[in-house]
Length: 233
Image (tube, rainbow, N blue to C red):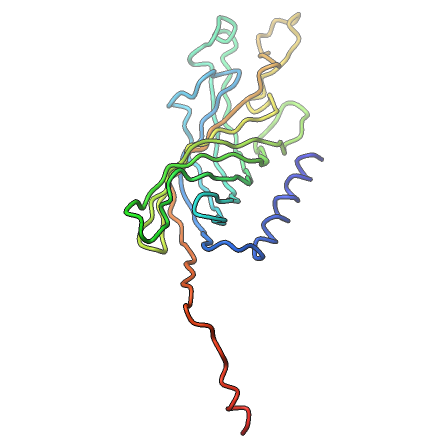
């Protein structure tokens, strides 16, 4: 229920963006990789990387602050091929699952790269926000497949002319969930070694390179006054 309310709030926010006074609106897409950290892998090993895609809509509220709504899909995977303890070496678990996510993030640009008088056409930025993840694949336990997440990370933007931008972003996803790998608490009396640490929730990362199209508004220096004389005839 919590994740459902969060998703509804995200779409409502997107629906009212047309009333904002943003100078630029951006629509973009990108490709990237996902990685996983949890009971099977404490870090983010390279051989766990899986392909992902993303689309986003960005509202530039100012030259410094932006709001971005994005959706993405990819896969996460992990295994006990590099055992983190002796029990993991006996457990020998592997998994691969699909993840669809929707996120709403706020971005802070460190440089004023959009000013026409500025020689700098790029900026690093940080971001953070809220979102949800929908988990796909077979499951052996009973849990909600839609889970809340907290996305945050760093990125880089580079303007290409006035209407395109190249971007790179590395983001982490904090979950409140320990079943991405379906390894969590278990009955230690059975000693089937299928259990993990229920106090340590699973994480995943989503890194992308993207291209976006900017709706550039050119201000008119003169006020338009209609010629009402044409109505006389």
